Amino acid sequence: MSQTGRFVVLEGGEGVGKSTHALLLTEWFTSLGLSFTCAREPGGTRLGEAVREVLLHHRDLDIPAESELLLMLAARAAFVRDVVRPALERGEIMLADRFEYSTFVYQGIGRGLGLERARELNAFATGGVRPDLVVVLDLSPERAAARRVGRREDRIEGEGQAFLARIHEGYRTVAARDDHAVLVDADGTPEEVQTRIRQILKDRLPEPFGSTEG
Ligand SMILES: Nc1ncnc2c1ncn2[C@@H]1O[C@H](COP(=O)(O)OP(=O)(O)OP(=O)(O)O)[C@@H](O)[C@H]1O
Ligand SMILES: [Mg+2]
Image (cartoon, rainbow, N blue to C red; front, side):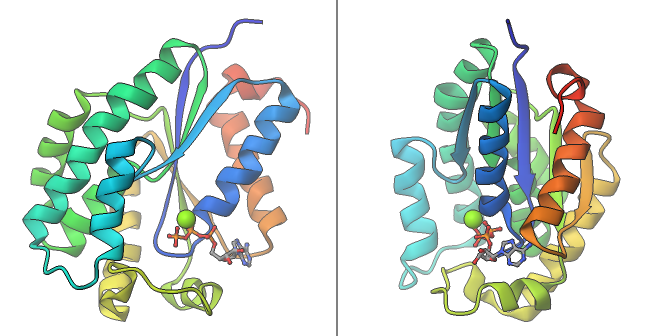
């Protein structure tokens, strides 16, 4: 059976469940016999993982917002060239844990660099490759914080509640204006939320998910 390449992205604030649901989705894809590539951003390439380390784990670095944006995009250009495009050309499902929405929301809105500027620079980095579907996990910053208890905070998570509230609102704003985005209620058990996400994939991408059982 030949597959059409599909680019699906999981987005949302800190601790909403992106990585949990990425893993559960790959289990579903496997059970359906679908080929896929799954990667996180920033990351997914050696350059991307190096940039991730600088951006998230060097809390001693004083990183200007402009540098943060450009570093994210530097990683993204490699991610698109080396991971996303090849996966789509092979006809796979490309599942990404964060992509351009994170830049729009964290750097454009959260850091105040402007949504339009974030979009323009992002388009330069991606060469115009866009997701077929963006699943935005929506959870209040308070509930998300409760899920992260006991985990070590990275540089961005350490920004505090006002920043995280701006991120939460930012995702809603950006998703509301985009036909390719769906906001999902991320409250409930992982199983409940995963069922919602699978239903959205079936509804929005009938090829290859629509005709499947389970
Ligand atoms: N529906 C859920 N109910 C309760 N806990 C959950 C649920 N989904 C995920 N969790 C737990 O919440 C924590 C955060 O989830 P996860 O790491 O998947 O979030 P994330 O969005 O990838 O976070 P980050 O932004 O830090 O990468 C984990 O400990 C996970 O086990
Ligand atoms: Mg994660």
